[in-house]
Length: 338
Image (cartoon, rainbow, N blue to C red; front, side, top):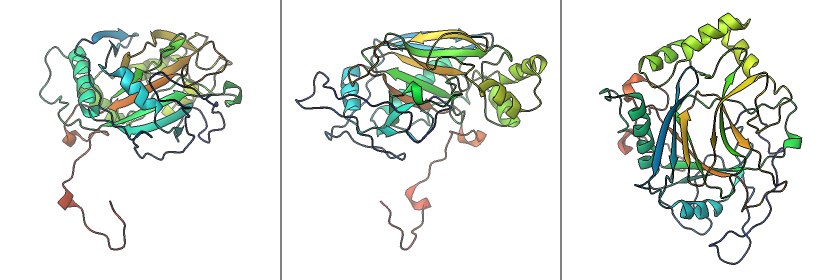
C-alpha cells in the first residue's frame, strides 16, 4: 500500500531465517517467488478461516479538517495467532506493485464476511439511518493479501516518498497487524501543508461528484478549491506532482513531520489491531523498528483487504462488479480452461 518504489525487487531487504513458536522443528523461510495475482494454499496444505471476535473493541473517529472517517478495532479476530502461523507458512515474493516488501495472496474462508462487517461498521459511522441504496449485500470476495515490510532504505530511489493514496477503485483500505513486535510501527495519516490536501482521488470529475453525493466520506472537491487558492497549479497532474514529487530529504517510513507534511493522526500498530480508512486518505506505512536486521519473528507482518463501495452495480462505480452465471460463457476451441 505504499507508492513510489520500484517493482523489480532491487530495494528488498533479505529476511533472516527464523523459527516461530508453534511450528515443527526446522527452518521457516520466506520464499522469494513472484506471484502474479494467483492465490495459494500454505506450504503445509492447511486452509484458514477468518473468525471475527465477538468481543472485539471498535473505536470510530474522524481525522483532519475534512473529517476522514477512520475505524480502529482491537482484538479483531478470535484466531489471530492461527492466522499469523498460516501467514508465515505462505510463499512470498515481490508484489508487482509499489509495496516496499514481499507479499502473498490467499483465498480465506470468512474474507467476504470480514469485508461486510467492516463495511457495515463504516456505514454506521457515516449514517444515523442507512439509506436504502447503501448495501454491503454484494460483498463476497475471500481474497486477502499478506505483506512483509522488507525494504533496504539505502537502495530506495533518491526521491522516494512514502506518502500516498491507494487506488480509489475500492472504497476502504484495511490493515490487520500480525506482528508481535510493534514498537515504532503503525499507519500515519497526513495533510500536505502547501496545498492543504489530505485526500487524493484518481477518478474523473463526474466520478468524484457522484461519490460525494453518496456521502461515503469523500470531500475532495472543496479541497481542490482550497488548493487552487493556495498553490500555482493548473491541472490535476501538476497538483499530483506537487504532492508526491519529492521526499524533501525526509527519512522514509517515519511519522516525523516536516515543512511539506502535517501529521493528522498516527495509529500505532498492535497485534490483532485492525485499521480501516478510505482509500483516498493520504497515508504512509510507518516502520521505525530499532533492530537493524529483521527476522521472521520481528518483521512487520500485516493482512490487507480492500472493501468495495456499498452501492448497487447499476451506479457504475469501479469495484462494484457484475456477476455472471456459468451459462454466460462460451467455449473457445483450443483454449485450456479450468
